[in-house]
Image (tube, rainbow, N blue to C red):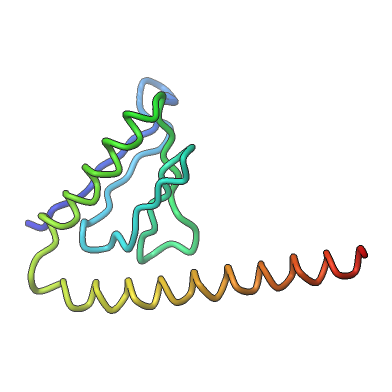
Length: 112
């Protein structure tokens, strides 16, 4: 069986987590520590999943844990596909940042 990252919200409804899920390790494209939260980008989702922690130490530790879990639990048969998906994801993020920066520049020049 393939490794999965399992999660559940602390919020409860009728004694169960309000939200919970499983993500196969080989679907995690990136983990980004923003300094406030962890953003976990997954193949199937357009927006990253946001994970909040009580302390920066916990956030930094979980950043390492998730990256290690993905590295160790991704089957060899999925690595090439995951690497290709990560490259596409990085290119898309770069293009989104470039467009956002261009929009900011445009607004700044219009404000002068």
